[in-house]
Image (cartoon, rainbow, N blue to C red):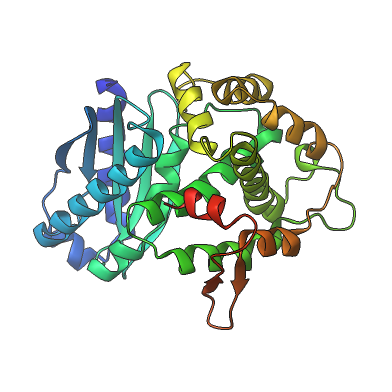
Length: 311
């Protein structure tokens, strides 16, 4: 771990904490960050708490980090980085208030965490898994940001469902509700040339769903998106390195013995290419209900693949 960079970030955390917390609350806490170290499937997570977190909250946060990391391990087969820093900054209120993942000078994640966060908010959080998924994908040029954000948006829900943190009807209901935001609108020029929020996050997620379904169809259900991404990791691809998107997708294809990722990229990168999501949901047996949950049809044509995705 880059100890010089870590020390510099700790000093920044101390300064930031005084700005984020009310003075009276900040004065009650220790002057130094609290450092905890977690061993997750052989990887080391250095958990750094800025001043402002009391001991009970740090204990709940540690369990949340372990739980989230284990969900990522289950999906990727291992934690994406051998060593990573997780920096927690306090903010008033409850809940996880956003995060950012950095690849340089060494991989680390920075999150803002409400000082009144309780177990329900920790259990329902998706932000940490989203940021940890970023650690598994090579950095790509800015115009390909849809791949980074789309993968994190899609995989975090799948990983949490597999870990028992998100019921399947809630997972598929959220995907069916939110994915239309990724469809092309007037003036769209394809994923590589339309850096809107919807196309970046949910357009990228649509790409991932299409790839996941296609890989499973072509492999007779034996392989899925996770096997392609594990292949990228095994080839040295992670957020610690920068790769051209073509290399990332080619390695993903090689891992599953297909051309699925390259074909989808060629189709979607330079033209709008809207996806018939209603037909896809019907084939997968997903019907969005008024309560936001999905009714899952067991005899749908692709129900077996749907079940395998979140099994």
